[in-house]
Length: 482
Image (cartoon, rainbow, N blue to C red; front, top):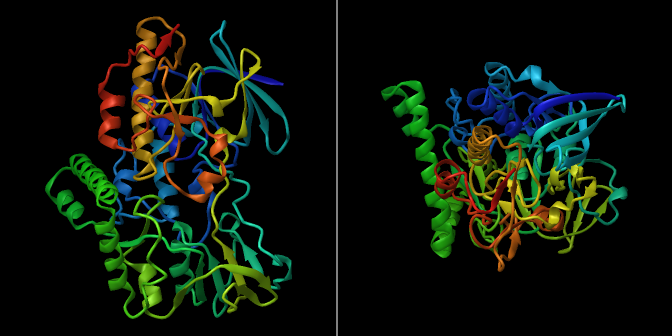
């Protein structure tokens, strides 16, 4: 069994993990680190998903890193472009040599006396074990199961004679030309796939149980283009980034405080994009805007596919699968050669790793999240959880900045460890992720909680987080340094 020691172990070489490593190179170059990646390549989500049209649903000026400009003219980038951007960042900050591939962490144990973590990882190819010791763990492994997406049990599914595909396991070559394709789902994945399959010549039906809010946004930011002409590259990027941050904050808060007006505004936009296709019942959700994730159609591609008759939407419930398609509860049958189950993800908290504190089991679901970056009672363990109402990277960047400040504080005062402690007597648990989405509700009991008051409350607000993580003092009576 191999043993390796380093100051920091980063779990996951995706967007958060590569970003955290770049931040260390920039702000804490004296720290040694290793990235453990369970797969064979870096990129996380952006190297895993291969379905047609895979793209960001946040603009790249906020989805990109604060320290690396986004050069492309597209605001909403495709998966290969994002993967290229991540690889460039990894090379610019010499991250690649720190990555250990095919390393799946299976257990963590923190020794309070030695102030060290022991991480046991298994090679997914050879099954060989490696033991790593480190002072800190950065958990950047995301929140869903990479091996399998979520597909509900459909009655008589085995009777269907065509292909059934979940987007997370998209085949390398899939010919859809002149095929009848049913996409089950109404979330971001379905909204992305439908226009792409339509462009490939498929006859596409998006089958949804209930509607989602969808808005068309231009894929080229005219204000951004003007700012790029007027200012040096880095200044322009920063101005564009802050412009988009404040636009998203304003839009989100308008949805929360004026839900009926914003609902009408969004539906009016959908009606304009759809032409003669009816908005009711297919585009009028039964919940308020931003109670669930909001879907973006760059340049209105989704609406255009429907308006031109290349795709359609059916709102109904599935009764059962039949040999040549899907029988609906209304009695209608939708014929299909291929069924795409864009039905969501399976959450996997912290990669399903077994936690121990001084060799005793530690239940992370009983913890509270401090400032969105640490778990109560678990020393030297930092988590990266992005925004649900804005770009994931905005929060992961702030998290890295805060960790850098904590590391510097520890070094300055000759401490080796830090632990968050709940001192409030009336702190009430609140679900960690504040969306009423199926994949979140299915796995809420696996996740730690946020609290009902700061600093245990996660506000999903960049301005408040910037103050808390970048400006407020690191020293806090809820933190024990030792």
